[in-house]
Length: 285
Image (cartoon, rainbow, N blue to C red; front, side):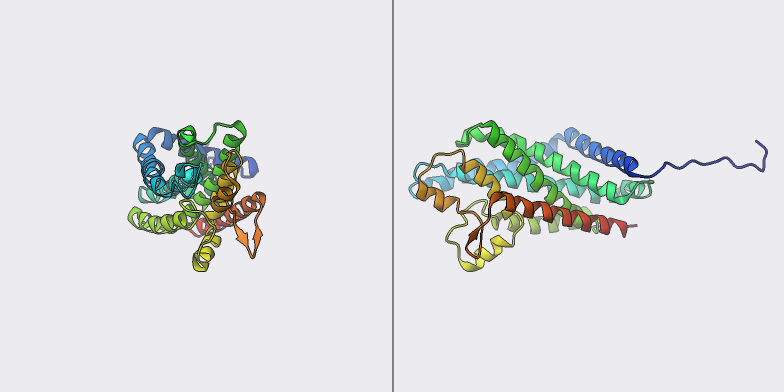
């Protein structure tokens, strides 16, 4: 090669296969980060366990006469599963802010892959991590009177995965515009607690005041908690009046939403949030 010749540079070819590889790489990185961070694994379980065994036992002693034949911890168990998923999913999204502070995000954004693939990998990775965390709480089902029925376990796993993906997409959308961890965690706490307490995770949706009913209906997490509760109560033997009180479902103008419709609502919200997160990342420098 003479001095005037220039060596050819071959860029990776684009296309669907290239983006799929990028999704795999980002997803694998999220899983490895979760597996290697034992402190995060333990700390994110503290709040759900406190709610399930401490708060559930304490309040259960008060409401025992109101719900004969059913442990209050059994009632809040689906809500605690959702709490585990939402908290872990939002923490997974926080890794975007961390990567931005340390410069790794810029390296990913200048890589010859679509930003949609990066966001999808983040959301899938966060969803799998959150579901894996939920499996630990799922393993405690027998301690609160929830049967280890294979159909129930598989149903809850699928519903947790769907909810985790939606919440991770929401957290990714928030994190895309954040510059530091303090700001993100402040907004995260401001978003998580109202979503949990307005989802019916800790109390039944029946006989609520009108203003509180409206807030629960417009809360996306409500449509993730209710299918989990429906699945659990379908495998319990309780009195009809107790079932009507504790598992009334979500009502729209007198129509009780079927479970499949609630899951479609969660899936649609997740898809919209994913598209918004991708659009936000395309404007990120």
